[in-house]
Image (tube, rainbow, N blue to C red; front, side):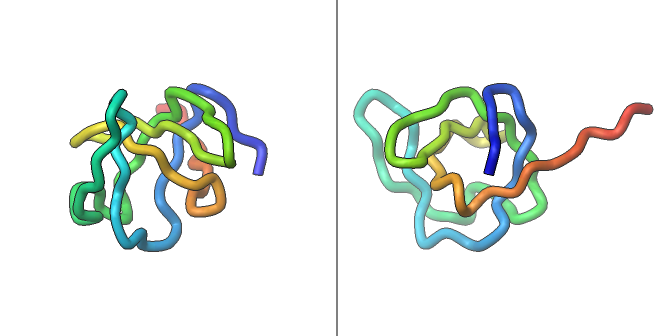
Length: 74
């Protein structure tokens, strides 16, 4: 999947946990991000991980678990 910083994404399949994008990452419960919530990519990491900023925090998400969202103009 071709993703870049600034793209809007959502989680397409449930995750067993969320890993924070903090300097010392922590595992958090997956309920912090709802399946229909849209987040913004803020960084690209090694091993096909991206930093995604959601309403309740920034998390490291595997790229294959994300789906790109198109933002509609109003």
